[in-house]
Length: 188
Image (tube, rainbow, N blue to C red):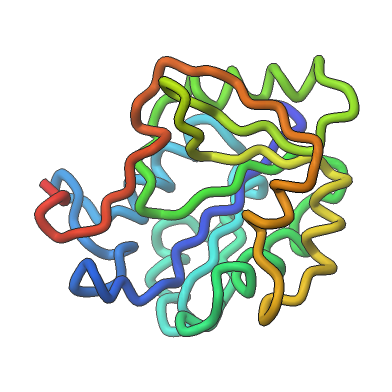
């Protein structure tokens, strides 16, 4: 998927899930590893940025040393994790954004959204929808990326910003765009 990159938010403590979601098992593999395995089949490692807790750095480098692992405060707002990821990424690329607990493992989903980015004009973000419900991953333009980088994580919210921007909603056949793996029993 040329001209696109990924920012995966994974630094949270996962209080409702009984521990950091990044390390909860999913089909016998830590969820973060499953996400990275999927992404590496569709993106160059240098086009993948992941927010993690500082103490996970060594473990994450063993997953793949070429992925951009960025330390973030697990107590801070998600925007505090996202901004450093965006700043460390290519300024010219469209960027997929989503959380580690979102099982969006369908290449066609990413391909569909990336294709939309190539033919849309004056659109700052592309959001998938399934049966009228919006979901993830969000795909943001290089211009909107700069706006997000200037936000204050203590007072601003990405969802509020997106409501005021030029967004294209794209219907997709993937129910997974609205799923979150929030509780331990959802991790088979």
